[in-house]
Image 1 (cartoon, rainbow, N blue to C red):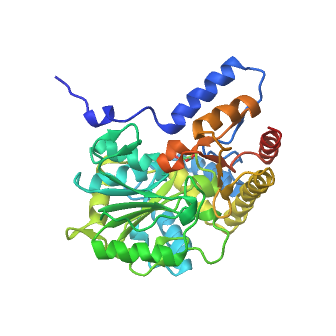
Image 2 (cartoon, rainbow, N blue to C red):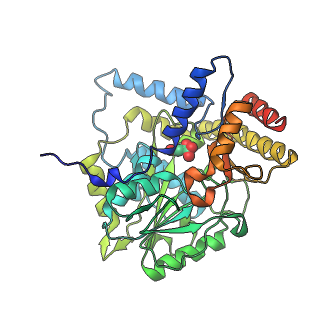
Length: 404
Ligand code: MLT
């Protein structure tokens, strides 16, 4: 008789953004006359840049001709894209990463969920609290997190590292020693950024205790402060303790196109085994590569034209972030994030939980955000707004919130 993976049954509720989607759809169906502004999930709204569109068209035409048609992509990605990434995202910044350490995928969400597979189920994970739910949920599915305490909304075998106003939303080194450490900077959901010296402390710590850091740099393009690290490989010693995840979703608008990459340095080992080889084995067995046309679109991101165009797009969303930050601050809200990230993290009005504020905003202002408690217990009473809406909707949403 077939049996299910019982770990799935331990998961409380549905995926955070599915729950929100259902609530908003129900409200929209019951109130068809309301204009709802969605600043919940971090989904982009601006069209793909012209250089990317032109690369897509060109690649589609190649697929129409037997002489240039492409079948299966190489397991780890096309060289033209891997070398552009190594050159522009790493070597240009002085990071020692080569193209054969880059694995192309269909996005950072999948990689951040799949990467745990190459580690033993016995590993103890440490996560920021609040945290992007994919890191925890995928470890629950793998059976690595112990039992769930519904009261505290925590797992018995997970080390939670509170990211709160007192530590500027950057985690302190944990008391218990983890084996795998998930870090995300610029941070989702708080929008906080870590300094290079604090990130260096994490690298030193991981090397000392033999832990691996899974560093999610999906929002790196939003860093506006000069002295902040764009990659964990800017820190000395990161090649022996860190895996880095990247996305094309937030810098170039690929949320619907799907493209990302993971860096696994060749020196990185656990129990003497090179993780590069394990991830390559997993990729080769379970994945047939991102589509050729999408990888050509990714290559266009690194062209001179593409870089100029996506910089404009990022500036557009940054302007939204600034508008939200200043608008809410002027309205008396405690706000943070938004400077190096497309997320603004605000405190719900006194006496309201995150979900109460979610309902209140939806009903009274017809604005959708994300309740902080959905990202973990330390997110309770906080709320996340995204800067990825259109400028007009962003302005209108803030005006509606200010009038409440
Ligand atoms: C978010 O809203 O946190 C992100 O859009 C989710 C994702 O990138 O998967």
